[in-house]
Amino acid sequence: MYNKIILAGNLTRDIEVRYTQSGSAIGNTAIATSRKFKSQTGEQKEEVLFVDITFFGRTAEIANQYLRKGSKVLVDGRLKLDQWTAQDGSKRSKHSVVVENLQMLGSKSDNEQGAYNAAPADDTYAQPAPTQEAPAYDAPAQSAPQQESQASNIPEIDINEDEIPF
Image 1: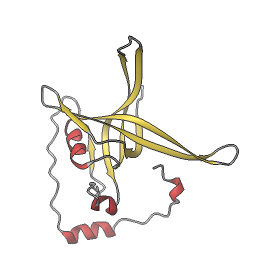
Image 2: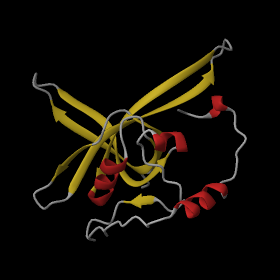
Image 3: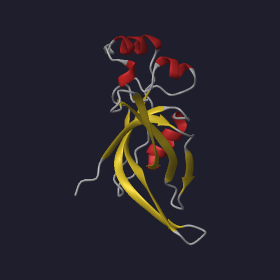
C-alpha cells in the first residue's frame, strides 16, 4: 500500500510543541491550501482546505524555531486518521498529516518580517527513521557576499499569480 501526501500552503497558527517523556519533540499546527478554478458558469472560484499537520523530533524543533503563522511551507508525509470519543459520547474522527519532510518557502520580504527564508535548495528537513537518533542541525555561517551570489543564481519564473495556490 502507498500513503503519501504533498501539501504547499501557509501555516494557520504558530506551532505548538510538547515533549514526550523520552524527550522527543512533537509539533502541531495546521496548513491552509487553496485552489482556484472556474465554475460551470465561468465564474472564478476559490476553494480553501485546512489540514492539521504534526512534526516529530528535530523537524518539530526546527519548524518551531523558524516558522510562524502565515509561513509558506511545502510538506510531504502520510495521511493519518485520528479517532476519539467526544464528551457527549459520540464517536469523532478527522484526517491529519504526519510530516516526514519539510521545506520552508518564502521570499526576501518574508525574511525581513521575521520569517525564515530557506534560500539554499538543500534546506529540506526529513523526519528520521523511528530507530535513529535525529542529527543536530548546525546552520552554516555565511557572509553577505556569499548570500548575494546564491540569490543571483535563482532563476526567474514567468508565472501568473492566479495559478499560485496560496
